[in-house]
Length: 114
Image (cartoon, rainbow, N blue to C red; front, side, top):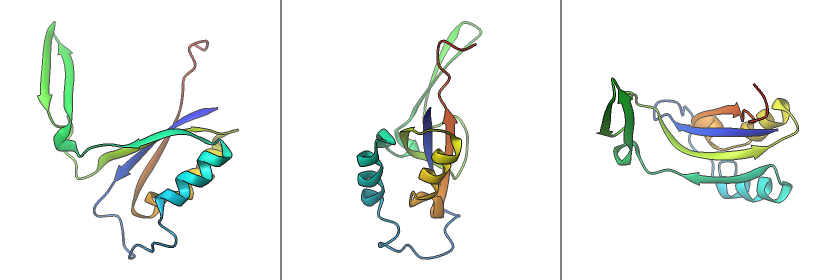
């Protein structure tokens, strides 16, 4: 089953100092790329680089920046291919941002399902 893992930066979350031996995202990427669990992923530019697009009452509304005011912001994403949610949770728990941010897992909704 495929999962989108949103990597959410939270500047207030980290209580302990970062440990490069544990918090090396490149090690995490290499491990899960090699296992086939990580299909792809990318870092995203900061919220100031975002453009929000909405349609309301037949009008196109385009604004700079994110729609919601929040100190947390989506810093990146990974697409995971795991056997089930438990495996996806284990993969997410090993990501360095699990200690200093939030990782949100969402299963893909296949087109052949209603």
